[in-house]
Image 1 (spheres, protein in one colour):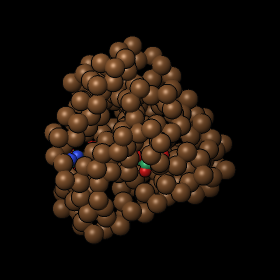
Image 2 (cartoon, rainbow, N blue to C red):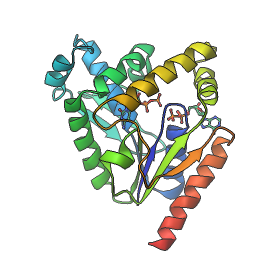
Image 3 (cartoon, rainbow, N blue to C red):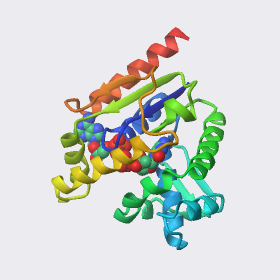
Length: 220
Ligand SMILES: Nc1ncnc2c1ncn2[C@@H]1O[C@H](COP(=O)(O)OP(=O)(O)O)[C@@H](O)[C@H]1O
Ligand SMILES: Nc1ccn([C@H]2C[C@H](O)[C@@H](COP(=O)(O)OP(=O)(O)O)O2)c(=O)n1
């Protein structure tokens, strides 16, 4: 069972995917964390993230390893735990530029496909282009949406007191960059089920996705 969950930032992809995977005994992969990890490596190694050629030439250098246990997801870069550093404001502001570089996407996509292929019990993979590009044959594709206001409120709640207006503007800017890049932009696959989470609790979203997976399992 391969489940692809895509959508913009703050729609609930990570929380939903982790909970669904834990509940159904599946592995879990946060592909945004991998793009954040390669961005963090570029920054710490002095690569100018706005120089696409420099990013492309360095794309093969870092070794990124993702742990896929939904109750304890991990990410390392060259053997170093990167879970904390990949969530900084600096990485968040630079990740769209790095992830738009085709050589970066090629490398990370290959890694994602090999992780999915070796997940014995199946896997929930969340990101932006999983249903369209990484795993187009996924058994179930979900596209989560929510209003920019709801997404900004959720994110600024996490960042403890961050200005909702500034968070909203930053989210809209990142969505626009991720949706307009040439190589595998953020998009809903034609065969994805769209779930608007604006007025749903996280618990309701989890139940909705679990039901969709169970329906697929029964039909298979
Ligand atoms: N339906 C929901 N209602 C309220 N808060 C939610 C909902 N879904 C997720 N959240 C909260 O919003 C924040 C962002 O969720 P997350 O799963 O990280 O989104 P994404 O992975 O899409 O960026 C988290 O703090 C999470 O607990
Ligand atoms: N499959 C993916 C996943 C993420 N990305 C890029 C684009 C996103 O802005 C960044 C960060 O993704 P992440 O899911 O961590 O972002 P949020 O935590 O939802 O804000 O990575 C991508 O290009 N393709």
